[in-house]
Length: 170
Image (cartoon, rainbow, N blue to C red; front, side):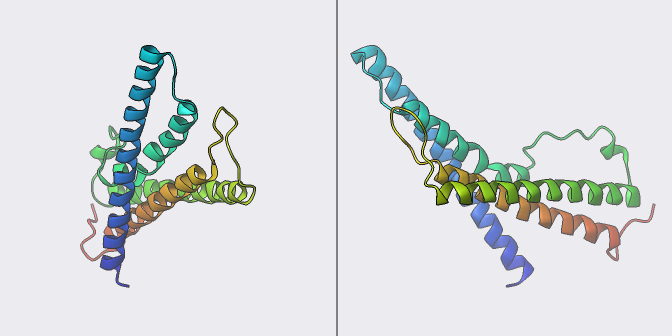
């Protein structure tokens, strides 16, 4: 698989996860609205709505992390960095990209271990309705894995700018 094909595949996975995130938000909005309507109109809320919303929030947040990063939707403090030029800016880009990649990789590893243990023990939530927790833990790991792969691409691009033939030497 070429680098371009890999990048296209990763972008497709990012978009699919972002769609899942949006669908989770839609389900949360629908479920909470229905729960409120039933609670106040009939005095009978939906059992397990709180637990269901908690699990769907995980999907809404973690499934969209890589797409948000790819679109530049994350909070960034650039007061110092945007004043840098040339080789200095490229060096800072490599350092920042390396740190982001390392942090995301560590979080991916730790969350994957938790997801594995949760799946092995068939972990369920404690509440009115027992929802399985392991699917949410798997979504966290998957979202972080896709973010890590995206950040690896960002790091590779930063290194290429630093050592490439057209790297600025200012």
